[in-house]
Image 1 (cartoon, rainbow, N blue to C red):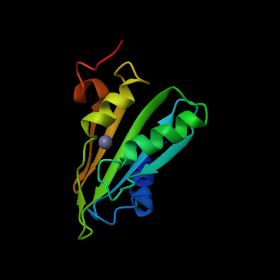
Image 2: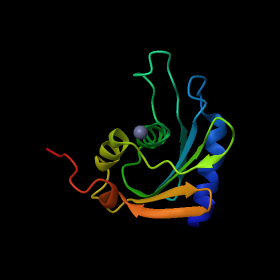
Image 3: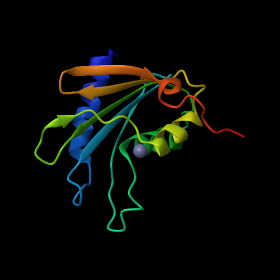
Image 4: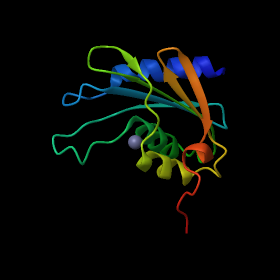
Length: 130
Ligand SMILES: [Zn+2]
């Protein structure tokens, strides 16, 4: 699967977002080493604090299916007016992803002009670990 194909999966996942408060829709597509792609979308909550990001819903779905090794995560976001916007993973998602990566996980961020590629280590150079 190419980076662009994975990003398209993330873009499609934005349609599944539950975002009645912010109307900021985020989609994620996580490519496991097995070759399976797991998608996620942000799920908001009236308490705001209980809101869950797209990256973590994708990761949790993958882990619940027995996956623990991942190759690439693609993230896409759409603003309330439908305009695409770059949305790198938040700090909580970076730390959560680090539980299942030595930092080499590739992260693709969709932008209005295409895509940008990082590693998890780029975005979280000193991850907490026990
Ligand atoms: Zn997040």
